[in-house]
Each structure stands twice: as C-alpha cells, then as structure tokens.
Image (tube, rainbow, N blue to C red; front, side):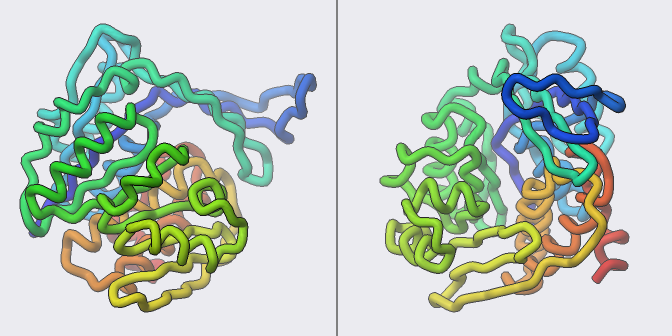
Length: 295
C-alpha cells in the first residue's frame, strides 16, 4: 500500500460553543469550551490515518505543553511523526466559535507553523504511488518546496490552498490535484460562477480541480477533462469545523489505496457527512468502518 504524507500545520484548538455567532461589537454568552487537536495539516493527517493508510506528518510544534499534547494526540492514531519538529516558537493556536447551526468563525495564530522552512520539504521521503497533501497555513516558500519535491520524486500532490492567495496563481501547475471550497475558488479564479472558476483554474495549470460546495455537494474536472458532480449527504449538522480537512484527508487516503477518483470522492463525501455530526476538528474524523457503513 502507498503512503500518505501531510506537510502542514498543527494547532491547539480552543472551541467555544455559542447559540449564535457574535456580530461586530457584540458580546454573546458561551455555552461550553474545550481544547483539541486542530490545524489543517493535523486534521487531514488524522482523517487519512483513520482510514487505515500509513500516514506521515511533517511540520512544527512548539516546545510547550500544547505541543506535547498535540504530539501525543497525533501518535494515538498511529501517525508517523519523525518529521514533526519541535521549535522554540509557541505551538500554533486556533480559536473557533461554533453556533447552534454548526457554523463557525475561526481566528488562527500561526506560532510554530510560521517557522516551517523550505528545507523541511527534504523530510518528505516519498516516491511514486505516495500521496502528499499540502495546504495554505505554512509559509508559501515551504509549501512550494514540498510541491516541487513531489514532482521531482514522482509522488502525487493534493493541494488544498486554504487560506487562498493570488500569489500562488503562477504555480498551480505544480499540483496534480487542487481542492478548493467556494471562497478559495472565487479568490483564485476571480469569479463566483463555479463551473467558470473550475475551467479557469484548469487553464491556469492545475491538472485536476475539485470544488467542495458544502450542502451542494462536489464538482470537479478530473482526468481527461471529465466533469464529475456528486451530491452531498443530508445530515443534521453539529459542527462544520474541519469538514473540508476530513474530505481532503480521506480522499488522499483512498487514492493511496488505489481507488479511482469517483470512488475516492464518494468516500470523502461520506466521511465529511459523518464529521459534521460531531463537535471538534481532528476528534470528529471518522474511522474506516464508520465510513464504509455510511456508504
């Protein structure tokens, strides 16, 4: 079996549940609060590992209690952590407000994630058949170096540019598979028309492009220019935090197993529908048996 490598961020999440999200200048009462493993990279690695695929994580944690706690949480899912470096900067942190409808507002402090350098890409001991996942929460120079290394070593790259920035437009050709949500698609393409945006990103160099549309499902341009449209599953939403990361991690894992894209996407959609029914980011990621049962 091929391996999944995640080159990305890890955060100590503080999740505060409220009845409604506050408007600018408004104070609202919190219902409860909890800490948990988060960060797009850590979430995606957890999602992939729980599918049963050998998973590696490359990134930075701080030399502090939060870093020790996150390292232990990642290890509990059997993620290989030799590429997870401890640095002097504090561990990254995210504060998420989640309302009764499951919607969220999130503020991220990069911390140790901001000190990942291009040299860290050399820790990706990947080869043909492996799937490497990168996002947008690390310095661009480091992420670009990881994508270049994937291309040089014949691994498949899955790029989830979140948050998205127009500075990456000239490098979209480094991605074997680009995964964006509606906001990221509009930011990178300059249009809010989904199909037009996909065509624009494809023309800009991305080999395959997938857009996740929340309750409207998934649409993408995949191998051979074929268009895939798949519906979302209708479920009771508790917390959408990490749902997109669940989608990316599970899809990457199924591609590493050898699934065709259509099958991998169906697994990812089912997994995301399970994740939004639980609170938290990484803790909400489902296991293979749960996903298989949902399918």
